Image 1 (cartoon, helix red, strand yellow):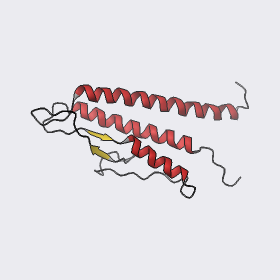
Image 2: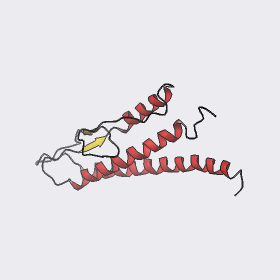
Image 3: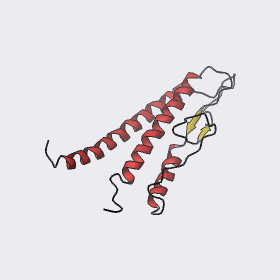
Length: 139
């Protein structure tokens, strides 16, 4: 069975989505923790850019199966998963030049959590189909 892949591009996209969402959650948590730090700039991950690069990689037949190579602005950040982390343009800036708006960060975190849960549910269902096939349809 040369060329048979158990986990296809959907599985790769969902696992990448989960990893990026987890990394983004940690960045948003750091932003919230530094809401009172003078001069702190909120940071974020461009989820759409990372996932679109993954989609283009899985569509290229010569590069399928290779992992996504992503970069980080600081080599000590996210040592397992390295994603392009950037300073986000603040919604507003306080007198102490802190760019974190608490309500906006909490909203982003809740939205990110919902997307993470959705990706996890979809991945669970794809694996459920595999589990069903392995058990030959028996429960």
